[in-house]
Image (cartoon, rainbow over all chains, first blue to last red; front, side, top):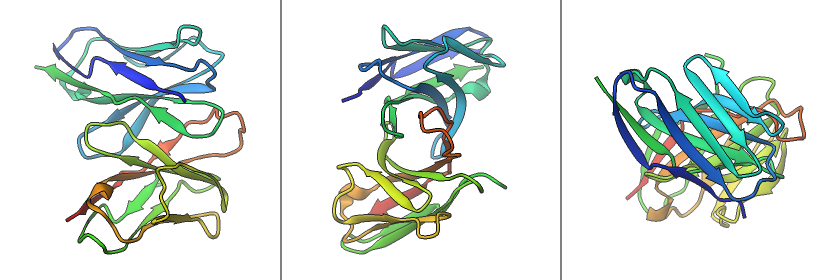
Length: 111
Length: 117
């Protein structure tokens, strides 16, 4: 059974810092990995999708990496802003079509 | 707005009542998914449809839960005889459904928040 873990559960940093969020998964047989953002009480917004054959994806100040063999992904956020405050979720897709999510990292960027 | 829509956004009900939620996917998206999210946790998969066919159901989907997508467009999720443990955010997502390799982005709706008293 695939299990996804995100560390840390919560993170608070001052504005302007670069930061890294971590995601690990137990079964390396995945098709892709997605990073999502969720604002309080809202749905999920897709940030980046990394195919299993790729090692990283970039979108603006976000960069996500994938190491399938070690079962790890990182989300790098450059020059953090207060508007980046949210919960960040990673999820993997395996043999079935379903996403298996981690429990999320609650990020707070302090002005 | 051409995103995934869900109705209602909030639902408060008494234990034992039946509730039904609706999801309208992005047009032309063939796959539709339902997830449930409890406070402080990531979403958990419930079921998914390819067009009108329900292809997988999680064991989380007890006999009290039923989902339909009769014409391959919108979907409904019904919970019968609700229990307090059913209180959660119910999320719907859709994807194109043209790639069998799971290599598609799933787009999520805003969710329906259910509170069972």
